[in-house]
Image (cartoon, rainbow, N blue to C red; front, side, top):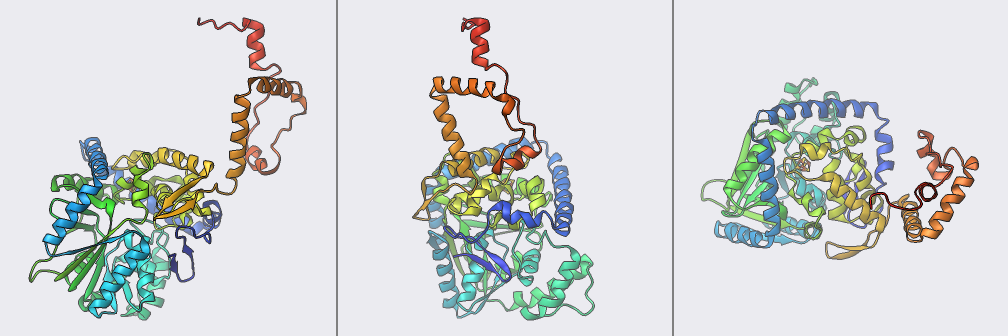
Length: 503
Ligand code: SF4
């Protein structure tokens, strides 16, 4: 299903052709000076803080390499670790459910909530539940989901879409947030205080008061997880506001929707990521709140716990030897904060809950490249490599982007979520593919190539200075290289007699 936000275009699901391509979607964003100002200020602030926090750690390179190896090892043996997680969670009193795709996961969660007799849930910030459009699926079943992370609350109240992994409302400034609180809070519960200003302390207090009544009333909590420790079946959520701790401890029933790639084998492995994640994401030395739970415990926290393990394209991604490294991602968002394309286009243009460089390689793999937006995402990058430099698990994003561009240019089919989808070239890439085919033919027919080169040399006086048609924009800011009076092969034959001096 598509993820819909009132007043915003629906995010595409596999095969959904409604969302425009990245260049089209980014077109308006780059002209929005308020948006660009908000993004520039926020990303530059976070990136400077991250650089300082990382520089404090003398063994950062070793931690990064350890994280890469742990993730690769886990993904290679994922079948074994998933079974280990299921056994450990079940032994600890939890129930494990398996969801092949978004529809299955949403149905499982909706049925679990309905079985409690409740009609509202509180949520911890979770990318997995955004990915599957859980809030909208619950709404269709008459269940209201309340986001409790401050930025997610702003997005939900504003009928908006998240535009950043870590700071979903990064595109909003304080004045806009104040206006949203004033106009929308009363429709969702406790209204904003009279005379609310845009000072951070007042905005935070308004959110705290608004959310507190929901925490105290809720009987069902829904979360994701940053990590699942296979050896004990322990789930881990790291956060900064304490809303997660409230959702994970106060309700009677807890349902966690977790992507299958979130597993780490042991507690020793977890230690690595608890050092790299906070410094890479919020530039903190450690997270203010790190909540861990293993099944259920009498008299302590929720008495019922369900773990929904989500595939939704991950197994297909795992099958791609180059692209599978995207599954190492720990969602720190450091790559977004250094990306010149993200800084100018903003997160909405990526048409996914995963924006920025990681979104450009993850969404086309999870959803396939059958739509305009997914086929265009691998091109939403200058390949500058800044994302790779900051990634705490060393995902070579430029390598995967180039790999996915090849896949888009070549077309063909692939399997996504059990369905065969056509990988078609994005608009504009058909011409590129035709040019590559012509080049391949020419290079495999040397006689024709030599004749063509001689013809080009003899007619060079008549060559245009700019390309016609769609190439006009490209050549407007560039000088086309001049064709030499004599082709290289002829010059070599004439001056060297065709002999290779090195022999
Ligand atoms: S790709 Fe790397 S830098 Fe980007 S969000 Fe994932 S872990 Fe962080």
